[in-house]
Amino acid sequence: MGIAYWLDRGIATSVTIAVFVLVIVYGYFFAQSTGKIIEANFSEKQAKEALQELADHLEIKVKAQTRNLEEKNKNLEKLIKMRSEFLDLASHQLRTPVGVIKNIMEMMDDGDMGRLPPNVRKEYIHNAFEKSLKLKKIISDILVTSELDTASFTVNNKNAQDLQLEDMVDKIVADTKFEAGQKKITLDWQRPEKPLPLVVGYEHYLSYAISNLIDNAVKYTPSTGETSETRDRRDKPGWVKIRAEAKGRELVFSVEDNGIGIPSDEIGNMFKKFNRATNARKMYTDGSGLGLYIIKEIVEGHGGRVGVESRLGEGSTFKIFLPIKK
Image (cartoon, rainbow, N blue to C red; front, side):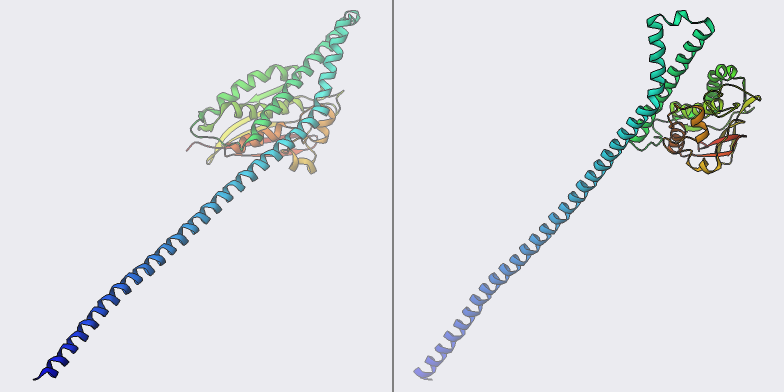
């Protein structure tokens, strides 16, 4: 065991220590490098996820803005169409009653009216009064149509009322009796003996729809002919029958008349905007053509439906079906 032995042993120990140190150093740097690689990968993953989230968010925003623009474009197109329809209506339907009223007022202003026989003077004044009522009706129809067209008309249960339909009909029939009496038309309102089930809705709009149906029945029942000259002359007793009853889960309101009826090929178009039957246009040239359209929009907005049956020269039956309150 000489110097050589201890020398060899020292070298072996030094080598072992050196290798151990190298392993530790390598392990440290490997751990550092691995950590940085993992951290870099994690950061890259986070960046990718952030970019994907941003892309998804932008896509949602773009879709929302696109829908918003499409909706605004639809509303703009609807407003342009409404403007065109209004101008068409104003140029054709409003001109007639306004012209008649203007001419009669000019006669009165010039003193010509006083030189006419009393019966003729009375006829002129009555004509002006009728035209003013028609003008009011046309304007009212335009305003209601504008309300219904601006947004989709649907009953909002928060603001809706529980309505007793027969009470509404009582008021409308009472208001219509005078005009019906002048035209020698019998209004037959058979009020149900027992209270009908309630319906949920807006009294203002439903009253407007019911009133329009009854007014139409009185207006077109029954004339000696389908012209403006004969529309107020009667060759047979006129009658309008008004009914209301519950059937299943619906409340059915009907207005039947023995008036001029509707041509069979035109029945399917009666609830379209600005549409009037040809025989109705001959009798009343200054109607708006909006009444039945308004009725349909109001009733469908209340979750109901409309229907019509008619025979030319014999009469028509219009029906409103409304859901009963649950």
